[in-house]
Figure 1 (cartoon, rainbow, N blue to C red):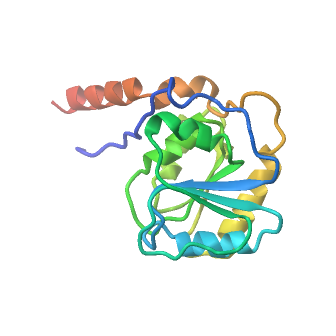
Figure 2 (cartoon, one colour; figure 1 turned 45 degrees about the vertical axis):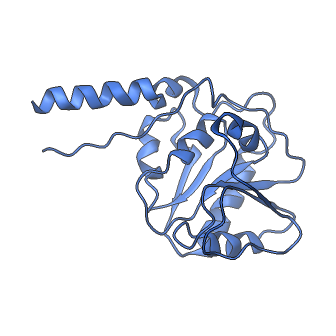
Length: 192
């Protein structure tokens, strides 16, 4: 009775719907390039996809970076510049083996990228707050085949949309920091 789910929010002014800038299909991942984040599985899934780029933005930890053409690594950028990075992708993928709710997932959705994630990222909890729950696809961890199929399906469904990519629509208000605080306040008052 004391537990409740309260997904993180984003600043909608910092993470508005973006216009796609990619010309070649691109999978984007932001955050630490590490085994914990399942980057070895993400790499294996990407290698199964032809003519698709994989873009990583963030620090490199304990997983090796791919050396093939089509992979691009960028050093961490300031939060104020992340929306421009999200505009470079068509699908956001997070193959984590374990973590709580990764806020980068909310940022990507706010910027208009469909999300493909594992059951260990908290991404599934975001579905109930979205106007289009199909924007989130959840797969088991450590399954490169399931991950590559889900990424390909998301690209097929969402790629080529014109103008600002607004997956969240009216749901953007439900995934703001203000809404996060209001849900937290309400839950505390209900349990007092």
